[in-house]
Image (cartoon, rainbow, N blue to C red; front, side):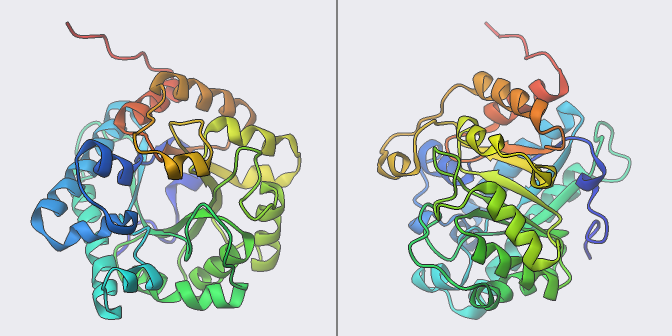
Length: 326
Protein backbone atom coordinates (compact mmCIF):
# COMPACT_ATOMS: atom_id res chain seq x y z
CA UNK A 1 0.00 0.00 0.00
CA UNK A 2 1.28 3.48 -0.81
CA UNK A 3 2.06 5.89 2.01
CA UNK A 4 1.64 9.31 0.43
CA UNK A 5 -0.56 8.91 -2.64
CA UNK A 6 -3.40 10.95 -1.17
CA UNK A 7 -1.12 13.69 0.16
CA UNK A 8 2.29 14.16 -1.41
CA UNK A 9 4.57 15.63 1.26
CA UNK A 10 6.68 17.61 -1.22
CA UNK A 11 3.62 19.76 -1.91
CA UNK A 12 3.73 20.94 1.68
CA UNK A 13 7.15 22.55 1.33
CA UNK A 14 10.56 21.51 2.55
CA UNK A 15 13.46 20.40 0.40
CA UNK A 16 13.32 16.98 -1.28
CA UNK A 17 16.33 15.49 -2.99
CA UNK A 18 16.08 13.20 -6.00
CA UNK A 19 18.73 10.91 -7.38
CA UNK A 20 21.19 11.66 -10.19
CA UNK A 21 22.16 10.39 -13.63
CA UNK A 22 21.39 6.71 -13.09
CA UNK A 23 22.10 5.51 -16.59
CA UNK A 24 25.28 7.55 -17.07
CA UNK A 25 26.58 6.43 -13.66
CA UNK A 26 25.91 2.77 -14.47
CA UNK A 27 27.45 3.05 -17.94
CA UNK A 28 30.46 5.31 -17.47
CA UNK A 29 31.35 4.72 -13.80
CA UNK A 30 30.34 1.11 -13.21
CA UNK A 31 30.84 -0.43 -16.63
CA UNK A 32 27.34 -1.79 -17.20
CA UNK A 33 26.06 -2.18 -20.74
CA UNK A 34 22.53 -0.78 -20.95
CA UNK A 35 20.79 -1.60 -24.23
CA UNK A 36 18.76 1.40 -25.40
CA UNK A 37 19.92 3.15 -22.21
CA UNK A 38 17.47 0.95 -20.26
CA UNK A 39 18.41 0.43 -16.61
CA UNK A 40 15.40 -1.73 -15.80
CA UNK A 41 17.03 -4.68 -17.56
CA UNK A 42 19.38 -4.96 -14.56
CA UNK A 43 16.44 -6.15 -12.46
CA UNK A 44 16.66 -9.55 -14.18
CA UNK A 45 19.68 -10.72 -12.20
CA UNK A 46 21.01 -10.31 -8.68
CA UNK A 47 24.19 -8.33 -9.49
CA UNK A 48 22.12 -5.73 -11.31
CA UNK A 49 19.61 -5.56 -8.48
CA UNK A 50 22.44 -5.07 -5.99
CA UNK A 51 23.95 -2.28 -8.09
CA UNK A 52 20.59 -0.48 -8.28
CA UNK A 53 19.98 -0.87 -4.55
CA UNK A 54 23.44 0.52 -3.73
CA UNK A 55 22.85 3.41 -6.13
CA UNK A 56 19.60 4.49 -4.47
CA UNK A 57 21.08 4.07 -0.99
CA UNK A 58 23.63 6.77 -1.81
CA UNK A 59 20.84 9.32 -2.10
CA UNK A 60 18.96 8.10 0.95
CA UNK A 61 22.18 8.69 2.86
CA UNK A 62 22.53 12.17 1.38
CA UNK A 63 18.97 13.04 2.37
CA UNK A 64 19.63 11.88 5.92
CA UNK A 65 22.88 13.83 6.14
CA UNK A 66 21.24 17.02 4.89
CA UNK A 67 17.95 16.70 6.74
CA UNK A 68 15.82 16.62 3.59
CA UNK A 69 13.12 14.45 2.14
CA UNK A 70 13.73 12.22 -0.84
CA UNK A 71 11.87 11.28 -4.02
CA UNK A 72 13.03 7.88 -5.28
CA UNK A 73 12.38 7.33 -8.98
CA UNK A 74 12.09 3.73 -10.14
CA UNK A 75 14.63 2.69 -12.82
CA UNK A 76 11.87 2.35 -15.42
CA UNK A 77 12.42 5.28 -17.77
CA UNK A 78 12.56 2.84 -20.71
CA UNK A 79 10.01 0.32 -19.37
CA UNK A 80 7.16 1.26 -21.71
CA UNK A 81 5.67 -0.82 -24.56
CA UNK A 82 7.79 0.17 -27.57
CA UNK A 83 11.12 0.12 -25.77
CA UNK A 84 10.20 -3.04 -23.86
CA UNK A 85 9.25 -4.83 -27.07
CA UNK A 86 12.53 -3.79 -28.70
CA UNK A 87 14.37 -5.26 -25.72
CA UNK A 88 12.53 -8.57 -25.97
CA UNK A 89 9.99 -8.09 -23.17
CA UNK A 90 6.46 -9.40 -23.46
CA UNK A 91 3.62 -7.33 -22.05
CA UNK A 92 3.52 -9.53 -18.93
CA UNK A 93 7.30 -9.42 -18.46
CA UNK A 94 7.30 -5.66 -18.79
CA UNK A 95 4.59 -5.29 -16.16
CA UNK A 96 6.58 -7.54 -13.85
CA UNK A 97 9.71 -5.43 -14.40
CA UNK A 98 7.80 -2.29 -13.40
CA UNK A 99 6.50 -4.02 -10.27
CA UNK A 100 9.98 -5.30 -9.42
CA UNK A 101 11.38 -1.78 -9.76
CA UNK A 102 8.89 -0.43 -7.23
CA UNK A 103 9.67 -3.32 -4.88
CA UNK A 104 13.38 -2.53 -5.08
CA UNK A 105 13.07 1.16 -4.16
CA UNK A 106 10.50 0.22 -1.50
CA UNK A 107 13.24 -1.85 0.14
CA UNK A 108 15.47 1.21 0.15
CA UNK A 109 12.69 3.23 1.77
CA UNK A 110 12.10 0.53 4.35
CA UNK A 111 15.78 0.60 5.27
CA UNK A 112 16.10 4.39 5.50
CA UNK A 113 12.65 5.67 6.45
CA UNK A 114 11.88 3.19 9.21
CA UNK A 115 9.70 4.52 12.05
CA UNK A 116 11.85 5.92 14.80
CA UNK A 117 15.05 5.95 12.76
CA UNK A 118 17.06 8.99 13.89
CA UNK A 119 18.17 11.62 11.43
CA UNK A 120 15.41 11.32 8.86
CA UNK A 121 13.75 14.74 8.73
CA UNK A 122 11.23 14.30 5.92
CA UNK A 123 9.60 11.36 4.13
CA UNK A 124 10.81 9.21 1.26
CA UNK A 125 8.36 9.24 -1.66
CA UNK A 126 8.30 6.44 -4.26
CA UNK A 127 7.67 7.61 -7.81
CA UNK A 128 7.03 5.32 -10.76
CA UNK A 129 9.25 6.72 -13.47
CA UNK A 130 7.84 7.08 -16.99
CA UNK A 131 9.88 7.94 -20.06
CA UNK A 132 8.79 9.20 -23.45
CA UNK A 133 7.62 6.86 -26.17
CA UNK A 134 10.31 8.23 -28.43
CA UNK A 135 13.93 9.23 -28.11
CA UNK A 136 13.80 11.80 -25.34
CA UNK A 137 15.90 14.36 -27.18
CA UNK A 138 13.75 14.72 -30.28
CA UNK A 139 10.07 15.25 -31.04
CA UNK A 140 10.15 13.64 -34.48
CA UNK A 141 7.28 11.18 -34.09
CA UNK A 142 4.45 12.74 -32.13
CA UNK A 143 1.21 11.32 -30.79
CA UNK A 144 -2.02 13.11 -30.20
CA UNK A 145 -3.02 13.38 -26.55
CA UNK A 146 -5.58 10.56 -26.78
CA UNK A 147 -3.04 8.19 -28.34
CA UNK A 148 -0.47 9.15 -25.71
CA UNK A 149 -3.01 8.41 -22.97
CA UNK A 150 -3.66 4.94 -24.34
CA UNK A 151 0.04 4.28 -24.86
CA UNK A 152 1.12 5.10 -21.29
CA UNK A 153 -1.97 3.79 -19.51
CA UNK A 154 -0.73 0.22 -18.96
CA UNK A 155 2.49 1.28 -17.23
CA UNK A 156 0.69 3.78 -15.01
CA UNK A 157 -1.99 1.21 -14.13
CA UNK A 158 0.77 -1.20 -13.14
CA UNK A 159 2.29 1.41 -10.83
CA UNK A 160 -1.14 2.17 -9.37
CA UNK A 161 -1.33 -1.42 -8.10
CA UNK A 162 1.98 -1.12 -6.21
CA UNK A 163 3.41 0.89 -3.32
CA UNK A 164 4.22 3.80 -5.64
CA UNK A 165 2.99 7.10 -4.24
CA UNK A 166 2.96 8.87 -7.60
CA UNK A 167 4.22 8.69 -11.16
CA UNK A 168 6.63 11.08 -12.85
CA UNK A 169 7.20 11.48 -16.58
CA UNK A 170 10.70 12.61 -17.52
CA UNK A 171 12.35 14.03 -20.63
CA UNK A 172 9.04 14.89 -22.27
CA UNK A 173 9.62 16.73 -25.54
CA UNK A 174 6.18 18.03 -26.57
CA UNK A 175 2.92 18.96 -24.81
CA UNK A 176 0.58 16.35 -26.36
CA UNK A 177 2.46 13.47 -24.78
CA UNK A 178 2.41 15.27 -21.43
CA UNK A 179 -1.35 15.79 -21.71
CA UNK A 180 -1.90 12.11 -22.51
CA UNK A 181 0.22 11.02 -19.54
CA UNK A 182 -1.68 13.31 -17.17
CA UNK A 183 -4.99 11.98 -18.48
CA UNK A 184 -3.81 8.39 -17.98
CA UNK A 185 -2.66 9.17 -14.44
CA UNK A 186 -6.02 10.77 -13.65
CA UNK A 187 -7.80 7.66 -14.95
CA UNK A 188 -5.75 5.60 -12.48
CA UNK A 189 -6.21 8.11 -9.62
CA UNK A 190 -2.43 8.57 -9.42
CA UNK A 191 -0.67 11.85 -8.64
CA UNK A 192 1.64 12.82 -11.48
CA UNK A 193 4.56 15.16 -12.10
CA UNK A 194 5.56 16.13 -15.63
CA UNK A 195 9.18 16.95 -16.41
CA UNK A 196 9.92 18.61 -19.74
CA UNK A 197 13.33 18.75 -21.36
CA UNK A 198 14.68 21.87 -23.07
CA UNK A 199 17.19 22.75 -25.73
CA UNK A 200 19.93 25.31 -25.12
CA UNK A 201 17.54 28.12 -26.12
CA UNK A 202 15.12 27.25 -23.31
CA UNK A 203 12.48 25.73 -25.61
CA UNK A 204 11.22 22.16 -25.80
CA UNK A 205 12.52 20.09 -28.74
CA UNK A 206 9.05 20.64 -30.27
CA UNK A 207 9.72 24.39 -30.34
CA UNK A 208 7.16 25.19 -27.64
CA UNK A 209 8.20 27.47 -24.83
CA UNK A 210 8.14 26.01 -21.33
CA UNK A 211 5.41 28.49 -20.44
CA UNK A 212 3.30 27.30 -23.37
CA UNK A 213 3.83 23.64 -22.53
CA UNK A 214 2.89 23.96 -18.85
CA UNK A 215 -0.03 26.31 -19.50
CA UNK A 216 -1.48 24.13 -22.25
CA UNK A 217 -1.07 20.90 -20.27
CA UNK A 218 -2.84 22.43 -17.27
CA UNK A 219 -5.58 23.91 -19.44
CA UNK A 220 -6.37 20.64 -21.22
CA UNK A 221 -6.22 18.45 -18.10
CA UNK A 222 -7.95 20.67 -15.56
CA UNK A 223 -4.65 21.31 -13.76
CA UNK A 224 -4.50 17.68 -12.59
CA UNK A 225 -0.68 17.42 -12.50
CA UNK A 226 0.71 17.76 -9.00
CA UNK A 227 3.60 19.87 -10.31
CA UNK A 228 6.06 20.28 -13.16
CA UNK A 229 9.80 19.82 -13.46
CA UNK A 230 12.60 20.25 -15.98
CA UNK A 231 15.29 17.64 -16.57
CA UNK A 232 18.18 16.73 -18.86
CA UNK A 233 19.24 20.36 -19.29
CA UNK A 234 21.95 22.50 -17.78
CA UNK A 235 20.65 25.27 -15.47
CA UNK A 236 21.85 27.87 -17.97
CA UNK A 237 19.51 26.36 -20.57
CA UNK A 238 16.56 26.99 -18.27
CA UNK A 239 17.34 30.68 -17.83
CA UNK A 240 15.88 31.87 -21.18
CA UNK A 241 12.60 30.12 -20.39
CA UNK A 242 12.28 32.04 -17.14
CA UNK A 243 12.26 35.38 -18.94
CA UNK A 244 8.56 34.78 -19.66
CA UNK A 245 6.51 35.82 -16.60
CA UNK A 246 3.20 34.33 -15.57
CA UNK A 247 1.51 31.97 -13.11
CA UNK A 248 3.01 28.96 -14.90
CA UNK A 249 6.21 29.56 -12.97
CA UNK A 250 4.42 28.73 -9.71
CA UNK A 251 3.79 25.24 -11.09
CA UNK A 252 7.51 24.55 -11.57
CA UNK A 253 8.64 22.65 -8.48
CA UNK A 254 11.61 20.61 -9.63
CA UNK A 255 14.87 20.49 -11.53
CA UNK A 256 17.14 17.59 -12.41
CA UNK A 257 19.93 19.15 -14.42
CA UNK A 258 22.77 17.76 -16.47
CA UNK A 259 26.32 18.27 -15.32
CA UNK A 260 27.29 19.32 -18.84
CA UNK A 261 26.49 22.54 -20.69
CA UNK A 262 26.43 20.61 -23.98
CA UNK A 263 23.38 20.43 -26.21
CA UNK A 264 21.36 17.24 -26.60
CA UNK A 265 22.98 16.60 -29.97
CA UNK A 266 26.46 16.98 -28.49
CA UNK A 267 25.61 14.66 -25.60
CA UNK A 268 24.27 12.08 -28.05
CA UNK A 269 27.62 12.06 -29.86
CA UNK A 270 29.78 12.09 -26.72
CA UNK A 271 31.95 9.03 -26.04
CA UNK A 272 33.22 10.24 -22.66
CA UNK A 273 31.33 11.46 -19.62
CA UNK A 274 31.22 15.21 -19.04
CA UNK A 275 30.67 15.50 -15.28
CA UNK A 276 31.17 19.27 -15.10
CA UNK A 277 31.87 20.93 -11.75
CA UNK A 278 29.65 19.74 -8.86
CA UNK A 279 30.18 22.84 -6.71
CA UNK A 280 29.46 25.17 -9.62
CA UNK A 281 26.27 23.23 -10.33
CA UNK A 282 25.19 23.68 -6.73
CA UNK A 283 25.74 27.43 -6.99
CA UNK A 284 23.65 27.53 -10.17
CA UNK A 285 20.79 25.77 -8.41
CA UNK A 286 20.98 28.32 -5.61
CA UNK A 287 20.80 31.17 -8.12
CA UNK A 288 17.73 29.62 -9.74
CA UNK A 289 16.11 29.13 -6.35
CA UNK A 290 16.07 32.89 -5.84
CA UNK A 291 13.73 33.27 -8.83
CA UNK A 292 11.92 29.95 -8.32
CA UNK A 293 11.43 29.76 -4.54
CA UNK A 294 8.89 26.94 -4.98
CA UNK A 295 11.58 24.70 -6.53
CA UNK A 296 11.92 22.04 -3.84
CA UNK A 297 12.46 18.73 -5.67
CA UNK A 298 16.08 18.73 -6.84
CA UNK A 299 18.49 16.18 -8.19
CA UNK A 300 20.62 15.47 -11.21
CA UNK A 301 20.43 13.98 -14.67
CA UNK A 302 23.07 13.00 -17.24
CA UNK A 303 26.64 13.13 -15.96
CA UNK A 304 25.73 13.75 -12.33
CA UNK A 305 26.26 11.53 -9.30
CA UNK A 306 26.10 11.89 -5.52
CA UNK A 307 28.80 14.59 -5.58
CA UNK A 308 26.55 16.88 -7.60
CA UNK A 309 23.40 16.16 -5.59
CA UNK A 310 25.38 16.64 -2.39
CA UNK A 311 26.62 20.03 -3.59
CA UNK A 312 23.07 21.03 -4.56
CA UNK A 313 21.79 19.98 -1.14
CA UNK A 314 24.50 21.89 0.69
CA UNK A 315 23.88 25.06 -1.31
CA UNK A 316 20.12 24.97 -0.80
CA UNK A 317 20.32 24.12 2.91
CA UNK A 318 23.25 26.43 3.66
CA UNK A 319 25.43 23.60 4.94
CA UNK A 320 29.20 23.72 4.65
CA UNK A 321 31.04 21.39 2.32
CA UNK A 322 32.76 18.47 4.09
CA UNK A 323 36.40 19.04 4.99
CA UNK A 324 38.93 17.62 2.56
CA UNK A 325 40.76 14.52 3.74
CA UNK A 326 44.47 14.00 3.32
